Length: 638
Image (cartoon, rainbow, N blue to C red; front, top):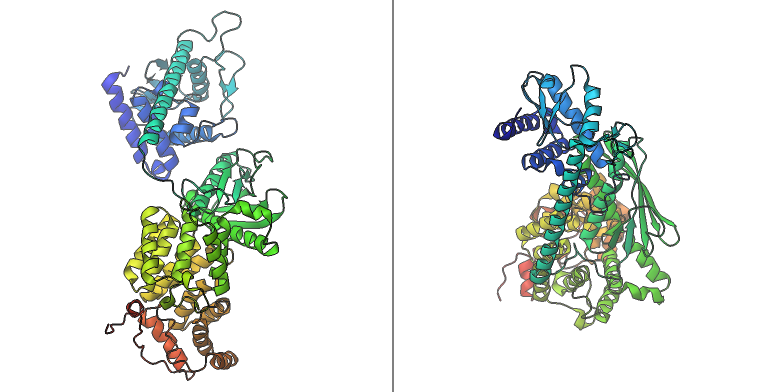
């Protein structure tokens, strides 16, 4: 019989051998479960392990975990048993072997001789059956260890009978004795454990309420007025019950990615029931079509009240490395980017509502979210009239969105675009009170990043400001941070593409812009600018032709100059003549482009194609604005 330190040493030795084996190295799930069971056993808590403790402590399930609905623990235990059995089948020479009897969550350890030796658990010794009687061992282990009678009880995932734990109704002592005592001890251990956890949680909650100075951010709270998206459990259509675990894990992944934007409130439904979705604006449902070699999902996004389908799509991602989680994250990023980002479906739906009936009473409940949507409208084509509508909206809610980071970021975006020397748009017709200085916009961006260091929109604004001021390296770092905080946000990738252009990192700019377009439900025209410039530099006529058609919707002053360069590269003579007549003979055709594009290679390519069609581009001259000269990398006398 193995006791004390000797058993501990052998248990640790066997666990390490399993964890270091190639099969366990390839399976994170088996590794984590085995390590959890071993740690609990060696800490003397083996008897207290239950399906609930594994689900909550290891797998992140909540107190509402229902094993009859979510079989994740039984599935994981079955796979771990199979992996352990497979390891020892390949290594029969090992003097000690770990066993995991069916119906039990406690590891046992066989002594010298393997299956013919002694199996020793923390508080008991069970005699192993004769050679070749493994199924009998599993049933016997369940019956003896759990106190099963001859009938009744539940079954585990293999159909093996598990005792219900009830006393013998005939009073003859069947199933009683040491096994029943163990059940009582386990129940006591579990109860004490739950009480301890509850006490610790209560103490921690009280301490947090009294001492935490950290304000809530977009990741923890989205203000009222924003759309509510209810996500129902996904339906498993793969015909593999083991995939049932993804029915709830996929909605959780999507919900987490939704929250990163701070533009929607998310409710995860425990069941796809109408009463659970009550109060939601939209409902997202999905079906799991395949998880073999690829992750294949079908999704339906609908109006919660009417049931009208607003989006129906199927997304497939190859799973070449067997990493389903990585493939699911990619799909979640596409879904949330298409729905929630600037210019996404949620924004478009509300834009349509505003356009249909601007004075509708139910718009009032949306509050400042309406201003965020109007900012999205402006960013689609940079129309000064749309800028003014968004700015007036924020004026109306002045002082009411101090705890709304998404709204504050949108207002900061408007401030940046109203700086005259940045030439983002024609500001000549705007009221003077709507204009900002470069220093004002920069201070606002820096303050926002300090207030919300986990909000990607903070660093998008900060990175854009740094780029337009000529601080290219700092801009790239800020925007890379934004991408890390929320890889699903196409705006982060799009603005990063502009910063890469300023550093003449053309390949990186093209890749970032392509990612932005892929993540966008309706890509804004400005996202195609880096693709067009990259195509001009690399003489890629196909890329330039595609990008120029999408970019033509811009109303920025410089867009016609870039489109003329694109037409020259493609050889579109009719477009060249039309644009030359419209542009005329500006003193410096690139004057309004230089503040947002600092890369010498990029500017040189545009200049080259302009000159091939007779448009002269002189060297840039100094401006009266000191900040404008700095942003253009010009040293001018003050």
